[in-house]
Structures are given as C-alpha cells and as structure tokens.
Image (cartoon, rainbow over all chains, first blue to last red; front, side, top):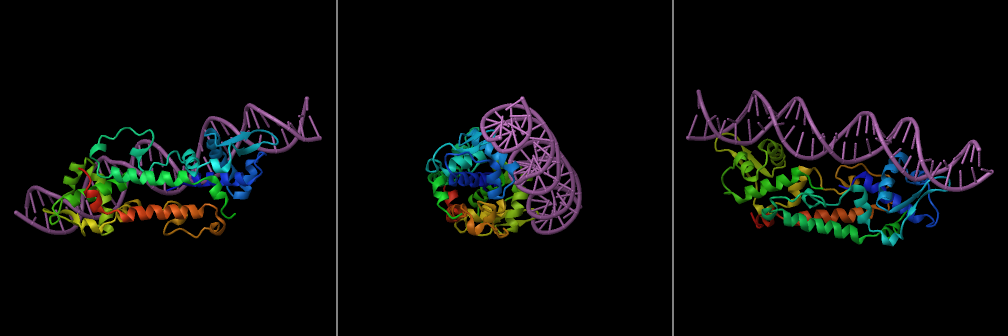
Length: 135
Length: 135
DNA sequence: CTATTTACCTATTGACATAGTAGGCAAATG
DNA sequence: CATTTGCCTACTATGTCAATAGGTAAATAG
C-alpha cells in the first residue's frame, strides 16, 4: 500500500508544478494549501531534495522549486524517492540478497510479472499528467 | 509490498493443491516441506480456515485440505484473506471513511486506476496457474 | 549590522504491524 | 487411553508510520 509519505510527496510536487516555475515556494505555503503538517512535510521534502527532484534554498525569498519540467518527472521516481522502493515483494527489491529458493520458486514468476506491471504503470505516468487533473 | 504472511499463505495453498486432494495434510508436513516455522504457519492457516479457503480437522488423521478445486481459487482471495486488503491506498480500502478531498483530489483517479490494475491482476490468476509452475 | 525568513538538522514519541515464539487445551482416532 | 493433530491465548523483539519539538545555518531586506 502506498503510504501517506508517498501520497503527500506527490501532492507537494503537484502543488509546486502549479506555481510559478521560476520562484521558490516556501514550504509553509504548500503546507497551508495542502492542509498537511509543515513539520512532517519537512521530512518528506528533504528526501525529495536528496533525490535531486527538488531544489531548496534557505533564507528570505527561499523555498523549494522543481529541478526539471513536470513532464520530465515520472510518478515512479517520486514514489521511489519517498517510499524507498516500489518492489512488490522483498526478494525483488534493489538490494535484496539472492534468494536460494529462486530457481525453484513457484510464485516468483508471478511476482516478477506483477512487479513489472507496477513499475510500468508508475513509470509511464508523469507529474504533468497529474497536474492536468482537477484542483 | 506483499508481506511474508501472504507469500507463505500462497505457498501453503500450492503445497496443499499438490497433495492428494482427498486426505488431510498435517501442518507439520507442510512446514517441513516449505521450510517455514510451523508455529507461524498456524497463525496464517487459521486465517485461511476463517475465510473458508481451507478446512481443518483435529486429531489423528487430521490436518488441512482445500475447500474447493485449485482452479476455483483466485490468488486475490488468498492474499486478501491474509493481507487484510489489497487496496493500494487507504482511501480505497473496503471500510475507509469517505475522504472529504475525494471530489477535488488530483491523485485519486490514478489510485483508482492502479487499484483496478492490481485487483484485476490477482483476480485473474488462479491457484492452478501457480501449481503449474516448477517445484 | 540586525531582524526576519526560510531551509535544514537531530531527537523523541505513540501507535501499530511484522514475524515470529511459548505453552497449553480440545478433539479425534487407533 | 495414549497419541496426534488443530486451535487458543498470550507474549516479544524489531521496525515503520506519522508525526512533534526545538534548535542551527543561511540568505535577504531594511
């Protein structure tokens, strides 16, 4: 299940995509508009900055802005930055140790198929697609 | 992410599907074959019995057996019985309270689409499909 | 130079889920 | 009646989620 963290991250990104692309937007404004605790958003936004999806600038006139154009973000990369992984089972995550049962696992083919489905879905959606939606 | 519980449940069901369909199979045997703690499996199997996916019989000669034919189980119902829900976001789970943001939510359409994708995927796969795999 | 605004940092919390373990009771059969 | 099996309650360690609290660092406006 996609957690609050990932869902909030998307809302922040959509919010930023809708603001003037040149200026920096203070987190306080985003928190007010989205009705989300600013303190909690700090944690989320920090991860988005680490992942280079956002640029943050301190001080007066500072805030956050997108590091590229909305159509250049996949929803998948935003979720992966905050959720840690989009892998559908532990053994298919990036840094999973090799499962000794893999060769004879009756369920692995299904998990792999499902994993691809999920990744393809989120990688094919862009931030711009979500901007187009209402609100 | 699908948890150990759901993955173990599938392995138990597959294991049972491969045994003689008439007799009852002791949990100890399944645990030995699958190399999973029998104690932990007790918890999982109990939930499968509650959901009427398995029938359990106590005493000598007892054990568990499928309550219907392998091709009549969807993978979805097995996972739902153990994972609680397959909903991809909280607001789309069965007993979720109505979200006040729903009407104006920019991400809801995507979540709904994703939710359908996931449910369709698991509801279209049957236990028999998994039996056919190696092991 | 100073006050203000902003991001950024560490730490803590309560609630809950995960992945088990322990020990015993109840039922069924040989 | 002993053995085998399911079934029940309880407990635990670890981790994640969703925050909250309180401070430090950087940048700008005046």
